View: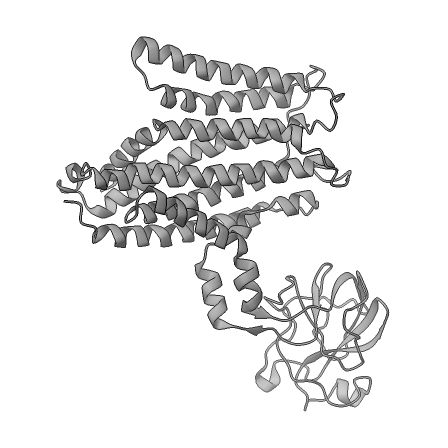
Length: 457
């Protein structure tokens, strides 16, 4: 089964990279990146610590969006050409008539399409990296980055030249030769650009390398692999036009799912955000015992006035999920009274004892431990940038299920974190990769189910 799948994948990959639309979209992405350096001259603010600042923030945003859209269109066109068109032309009969399962056919087709998409999107991302190094041309008087222009032109000229030469003398496919050479040659050009400064001086390779932008680009590549799985599933039943419509619809719905579904899945408006936490005790586990007190400083004044006795919850996310405090009942009585603070008749709770302006004091009250059957109250102590709430988060199960089923494209869009200088750890990229693998598995299962009952004779 593995050998059959890999054989189909290899043939699919070759068929994919030979399509004229493959070369056209990769070339358009490169041309758009060039135009982006000319047309992104709108100052977005400056920062000395972010990897991009000023106009380059807009350049990164537009550049990654260009890669995203071109990759989505490429996935739809390529998947249609190697699956739907083969079914319409009956050429798939030469495969399914042999002792080869349709599962192998679908998996092989996807792996071939995914390989072609990976090569194309990686080339697009390298063009984006070259554009970021060049920077935005804010005025006509700005100096051009000669190393970027020189090495990029050499890479493109070599790929095109070898493609023309091989096609003329040996009958090689120009599209296949040019696009497959363009990826490694562009990578080599990017490495030389990192090694050479704008003044043609040698420099450390890490000087102009942007690791956070690289993580954002890898996340976009994972999104393209998910869209390739969507295109594979759609093309098992639909033609080219409808496959493009389905891919575009999934893409747009994925971008808007947080707004239409996510905000309805969890209902809990936050009232403030933490700037600083000052525990009054040096205990290893803050807020673990009755009477433990913290002084909280907020980034801004709370949207809702905090009164003594107000329940206090917090979460790292603005939607209140996951909450870092277990639900509890409102505390009756005066929360400053020691009889209330240490009462075993009150379940563990976290309440506000005093609040003024941007500062509030919170205290742990109620039973000392997991007696009353409630377990530990505080899952994790409050931290900087946590969001503050005055009640537990309510969950809408219907909206939550729908939100989970629709591919959430926002998970793959890390540009806002990069431009706002919010470091993205590699562990977060690993979570995105796991989410992408799960989505790919779901859509390939749908593709197999659709292709199993498809009449191909």
